[in-house]
Amino acid sequence: MKIYTKTGDAGTTALFGGTRVKKYNLRIDSYGTVDELNAYIGLIKDQEIDLETKNSLLKIQNELFTLGAMLATPPEKETLKSGKERLNIPKIDENSILFLETEIDKMDAELPQMTHFILPGGHQAVSFCHVARCVCRRAERLSVELNDQETINNDILKYLNRLSDYLFVLARKLSKDLQIEEFKWIPEKN
Image 1 (cartoon, rainbow, N blue to C red):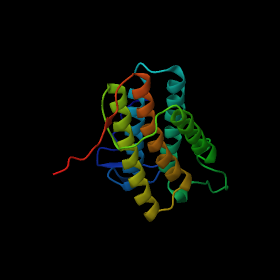
Image 2: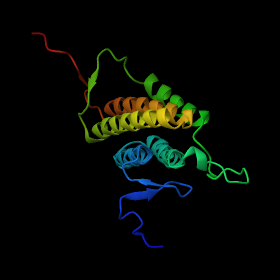
Image 3: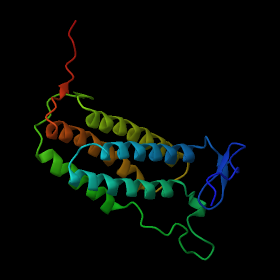
């Protein structure tokens, strides 16, 4: 299989099921941003961090591929004429969301109480978490907009919302693990 097909040379691409759309289509932008998020999570996973966190991030990366496939499937193409589901893979569901919540709670239980907003930075691994969190929020905003135009699975929206929370708490956990001081945002008074 060649990596290039030339079918997108005129600025269109195919969704799952064959429908061709412009490459700036909101659905493409949504799952493209999820793909960007997945790449940043790969950067976090490649840092010198604990194995349990690496395994959690690998699970999240796999779930993001699933989420991207769900976003790449327009509602009218979700089932075949026979009624069989076209996208025959496990879907993002309440268990996926529960996994993130459980991970957040485990990490949060070991962290000092947060009293201020925290400025990103202090260590490359921590900064990657914050960049990924911002990309996740963008993916969420795009998916919410897409949902306003064409209904998407609500678990996608919940998952992205929870994942951004996970990435924030992971940044705090890595700061603690790496013995990096968190920089609190304290507004300057005039």
